[in-house]
Length: 270
Image 1 (cartoon, rainbow, N blue to C red):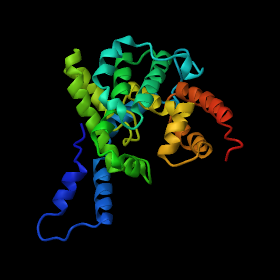
Image 2 (image 1 turned 90 degrees about the vertical axis):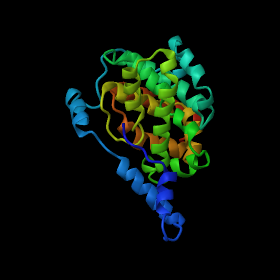
Image 3 (image 1 turned 60 degrees about the horizontal axis):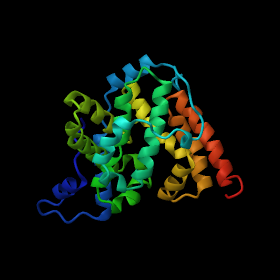
């Protein structure tokens, strides 16, 4: 797993010796460099996954449900003990809305791609953003949703903290070390690494993005990015749809966005 250094330790090392205290600009440059240093891609794994699934978006092998996600809330009751173990982590950054909806999308994606390890996808999706509860909350919006937000140091921190949450809660629920390692491999880099390493990794990433197209996702995320709903919906169409890895996710996103645009009257309210 990537060695994520914290911003605090980076700043501490910058102030040793007789050097003057760093300016805010220096701090930001240091954070940006830390992020760049930590973007380590296992190109062999990325290439192997791309070779296994050369068609993009990846065609679905099973049924694709494009109805409103409200029609199919998560039915994975085996996850209930895990939900209970991370209640505290759901109370930050809208996770108590984002995570249940994302897991519902993950279940649909697993139905469309039955060859994937369903339990791995669902557990990783449930836990992927729990790390937001263990970072400086004042920095989440100021750093994590502005500028080149995928490279923000706090993005790396929340991934690292999410891995720690997984390693804390999963052993007591009976999960093996091997399974936990696969979960943390998916969590680590889910925002900051631009390539997927496996089908399960891809499905978790698409589930994480799919919720944004629903009206609840637009309502929350547009405020995080300080955009009105129409501008954010435009961004979804031009930036996020092309990022989707699977055709099932593209179909769901397209249908959801059409419904959301109609409901929110984004054609007029812009």
